[in-house]
Image: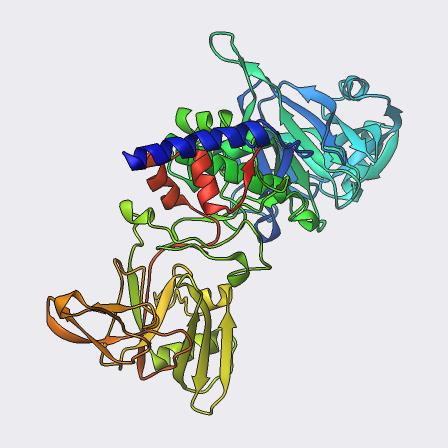
Length: 565
C-alpha cells in the first residue's frame, strides 16, 4: 500500500511539473530551419557514369535545380517515365541496353558528346523545345543560365563540323564542359535535355506527383538502382568525371526511409517511435556533415542506414507520422542522438568513446537488454600473442613481439584503453573507439563487436568473476562482500586472490582489474553488445517498449536531461 501511495504522489508531482514547465512532447516545438535533407546515395569511389531513373508513382519528371536555401526551381517537365542521366562524354549503349563509358564487347549505338549548337537562343524551356521540334535529333539545353538548342549526337568535333556543313545548319560544333549532364530516354541514344551550369548549379530531377488506380492523389516516388525513393535527385560531376547522385528529400520522408533499416519493422510501436525521434534529430543535427561532397548525410551506417521506401510498412510509417516534427533537445538545442544496436549491459559517456563530453550522452547501466535476445549477449575470441603482433603490424605499427596487454576500463565497465608492450619494451596505447577496434580482424575472423569487453591472459590460472551476467565482470574487489557463518557480512577489500564455490567445485577467481597488466602467450577477449555503446541501445528500446515504457521514457533513459519538442 505504501508503494502505491508513493507512486500516486510521484504521478501527481509529474503532472504538476508538466503544467508548470510545459516539458511535454510537442508543447514547446523546436522550429527546424532545415526540413529538407540532402542524402548521398552514390559518391566518392561509387560515382556513376550513368544513372537510370524511373517514375514509380507520378506523371513524368521535372528538370530544374536547387537554390542555396534548398528550394527547387523548375525549368521544364516531360511525360517520359524512364530517363537516364549520364556524363557528357561519348557513352556506349550495349546490346544489353545499358550504358558504358568504355566500349563493351557488344555495342548497339553511341551517345556522342559533340553537337551542333544553333546560333539562336531561346527564352524558355518551351521555346527551346519548339525550336528543337524543327529537327529530328535536336534537344533543349540549359547552359550557364541560358536556353539553347543543340542538334545531333556525334563522337568528335570534326564529325559535328562535317554534319553541320552537310545539313546546312547555321551553328557551331561544340561539346559542353566537364560539368555537363546529358539526359536520354533510357535504353536509347535519344538525348532529350542537357544541363551545364559549371560549378554553380547541379541538375535536379523531380518526379511529378500522380494518382493511383482509384484516382487518389499520391506523392511521387522514383525507382533508382532497384529501390524507391521520395523526393528529387541531384546529379553533379564534382571531379569532372563520374556523377555523384544525391536524394533531396523532406526530413519526414527521410526518416521513413531510415526506420525499417535501423530497427526491425515488426518491433514494438514505442521502440519505433523512439527510433524515429533519434533518426530525425540526428539528421537535423548533421546538416552539411558532408558539405564538401555535396550532401548532408550519407546513406550508410556511417551516418544512418537509408534505403528509401521499400522496407517501410504501415507500422514504421505510423511511428514517423505520430512523432512528426518532434526532436530530442537539450537546453532547447538539437542533441546528437547517436545510437547503436546493443550495449551489452551499459552505455558509455561520449568522451570515453568518440569526442568531448556531452551532458546528455552519459553512460547508464542497462538491465533491459537482458530481457530480449540481442544475438550478441556474449562473445569471446582467443588471440595468440603472435596474432596480436600480426594485427598491429598489418595496421601500420612497427612493433616487436607483443608480450603484454594492459587494459583500462571505464566506471561503467567498458573498455577505455589498451596498451600493448613488445619484447623490446616499446609500447603502443589505443584509447576510446580505437581501443574498441584495434583488435578487430576480418582476416583472422576475430572481432570486437562493441566497446564492452575485457582482456585477460589465458595463462592466468583463475577464472573471471561476473555478477548476474557475462556483461558485468568484476574488475576489483572493493565492492565485494562475503557472508559468513551466522550471517556475518564482511567487506573483502582489495584482498587479491579469491576462491568461489561453483557447480564445478572450488575455483580460483581472476579479478580483471583496470590497469592490471596481462602477460602471456595468448589472451581471451570476452564481451557483449554490438556497436559503440553511446546513446540509445536499439535492443534496449525494444525491451523497454515490450515492458510498457513509452518512447519518451526510452529517450529519457538513454539521453540524460533531455526534453522532446
